[in-house]
Image (cartoon, rainbow, N blue to C red):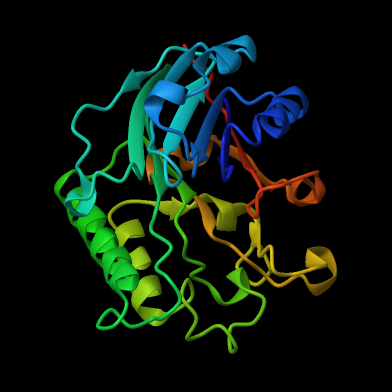
Amino acid sequence: MRLMTWNINSLRLRLPLLARLIEEQSPDIICLQETKVPDPLFPAQALRELGYDHQHFMGMKGYNGVAILSRHPIRALDAVPDWCGKSDTRHIGITVETDRGTVTLHDFYVPAGGDIADPAVNDKFAHKLAFLEEVTSWFRKNPPVRSIVVGDLNIAPLEHDVWSHKQLADVVSHTLPEIERLKAWSDTGFVDAMRLVVPPEQKLYTWWSYRNRDWKLSNRGRRLDHVWLTPDLREHLQDVAVLKDVRDWSSPSDHVPVIVDLALNPA
C-alpha cells in the first residue's frame, strides 16, 4: 500500500501537478493539506477520473482544508473533534481495510503559528500551542492502535530537520515550546517513520520558502511534513521517500510530497 502526503497549497491550482504525481508514483491513498477549497467546489469528479473514487474532504474558502483520496473503499471517522472550537478544517480521518486488518489514517494540517514565538503577543502562536495540547489530550484518551498520522505538522523537531539549528532556535516551527508539544503528541503512541528510514543525523527537509530565489542552491529547508506509525505497524514499513524534485516543477507548492510504502494490501 502506497500512501502519499502533500501540502498542495491549493488543490484546484495544482491539480495538474497532482495528476502528474499520480501518473509517476501511483499512490493508493493520497492525503492533502491546504486544499483551499470549500466543499461545494471540491473537484471530486476530476479526481474520480484520476482513479480516486473514494474521497473524504473538509475545506473552506481561501485557506486550510484537508482531503483523503483513495482507490479503495474507506470509512470516514465520525468522532473527530472541532479543535479549539474554530471549525477551521485542519483534520480528517478514515479507516481502510487491509489484508492485515483495519488501519486508521489521520490527515492533519497544524496551524503555522505566525512569525512571533510568544503566545502572549501572537494569537496565532497561542492557537498553535493550544491545538497541539488538545490533540495530545485526545490521543491520550483514545490510544492509537494500527494507526498512521500524516500531514503538515508545521514543526521541524530535530536538529537536522532544519538548515541551521542555531539560527532557527527562536524561529516559529523550531522553538522549544513547539518541539516539546510535538514530542508529547508523538509519545501518545507513535514512531517517526521518516527517521526510521533516514537517520536523525542526516539532513532531511520537506519545505523550502518561496522567498529563496534559488531554493536548491541555498537549501534552507525544514522538515515540516511528517509520517508517524503506531509500533504495531512498524514491521510493515518498507520505505519513505521525499520527492524533492517536485519543488522544481512549474508553479510548485513550497512543500514537497512524501511517499510511504507499507507491506499491506488494501482489501
